Image (cartoon, rainbow, N blue to C red; front, side):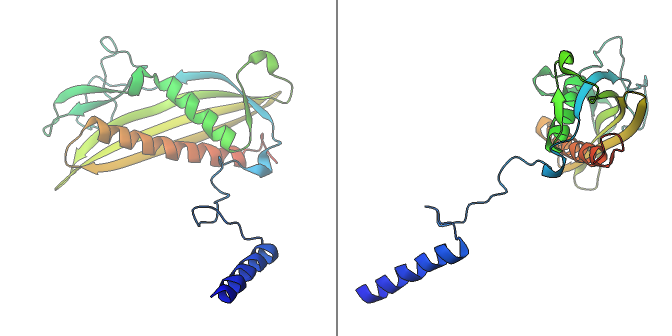
Length: 221
């Protein structure tokens, strides 16, 4: 039995030396991909400064189309509203806000910064640190709306976000249109379900921003 155990230990040591096998207490090979995603190829790219974020969403007073943003801006703060809850017959039964009383501009700013950092760029928060190579970003929030439509068994809860990003550096200008959408099927429209649709839309928005920044001629290789 000792001879078999000795042979097994020698074989295991040989594997570790020759193949570089990593052995952990859990018996699993550590996943080197569990680090924060970053495009290493773009780690030396230019810095970005967010010059402005403007909410230019258009609201109507009423509409039978639930995907159309409807809001009385004289009664509600549009900077925080992202949708309307409606009954099965279309009657308004509540107003949808972002979690923790967050504003739409805060939400979009965080999403842009996340996408830029994941793409290897440095986002400058202090204007004093801007230099001639820094790309300025002006962001317009064109659409951010959440609603539901009735299905046969469940309801479809949807969220759509659309931004226009204008990049500027010296005398150069470039416009990027980015979008993100999400859909969740649920029997009833709970706050949790609406939040899930918004979270999916944000994830897809970040992916699209990331893709457009990589393809940008201004931020270039």
